[in-house]
Amino acid sequence: MILTPTEQHITFAADALRKGKLVGIPTETVYGVAANATHAKAVEAIFEAKGRPSHNPLIVHVSSLNEAEHYVEFSAMAKRLAKAFWPGPLTLVLPLRTGAFIAPPVMAGLHTLAIRVPEHAVMQQLLQAVDFPLAAPSANRSGKLSPTNAAHVEEELGDSLACIINGGSCKRGVESTILYVEDGLCRLLRPGSITTTMIDDITSIRADIELPSNTAILAPGMLLKHYAPTIPIRLNALNVEKDEALLAFGSMVPEGAAKVLNLSKSGNVEEAASNLFAYLRILDKPEFARIAVMPIPEDSTGVAINDRLKRAASK
Ligand code: TXA
Ligand code: MG
Image (cartoon, rainbow, N blue to C red):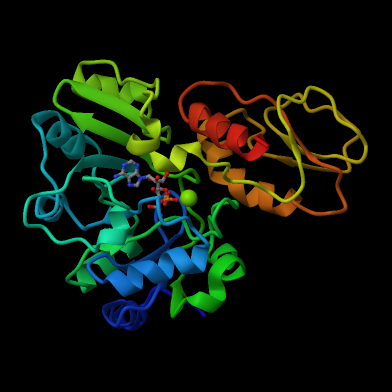
């Protein structure tokens, strides 16, 4: 059930969450499936609905930095990053605060909690309407394309949700940047629209983008095949076959594809990111042999787009 974001519907969603039900929620990055993060059964229902492995932890969403401080310990560097980018598409992985209670399945056995303050006005309203934090992974079946509008959420998880709050199409279109932060160390676990250049400007050190050998412990989600359409993907396509669908970028588009969608005719990577998952979803049809994707420049949000495309194409 897709609901318009009226005050009455936000109250309805808040009540459902309080009772341990799941709600589809809009954020500026992608849509999420939210549960009360202090309610173990509700959180387990997220894993169940998504078919998500229980070793892959969830991001917790709160309304402000002030509220985040109830749950995690901020180093000086983490505080500077939060002040610079919250509310917004940055997730910080920080040590859980002693005495703070988050339902154990959220953290999947780690001693850290991934936390963020989303910017989307409707999600902010919902966070104000509840008195608990919201655990919310992207609202897709595990491994599939992330949803960037309410109809995608209905398609993916509709049957498991009390409702979906419609917040329009997601402005950013790729999931939040995830950073593991300790004083003197800042590690990029997932690229997003907050880039390493923007991060380095705040921290005055270079974010480490090499994942360490204990990646399985640091970032369980990074090891998985993800964002995958059902038909194959061919990357860096400069030409196209007639049975292929083409995901184009820029003004020089090869001819002859069965269907073409252009992520950004003007070659703007931010625009491309906001169209990425919706266009992949449209082209993911059995009538096409595969989706050919033109090269995307590896700068700014292009890094996040290429990260998602590589995972989508991995076997
Ligand atoms: O933009 C976003 O972050 C969206 C919206 C809904 O907020 N959420 C999202 O959640 O992308 P999800 O579950 O699809 O991706 C969360 C990622 C996973 O790769 C997970 O492994 C990682 O965050 N993660 C969660 N907690 C972690 C932790 N304590 N340490 C390292 N990685 C963690
Ligand atoms: Mg996801």
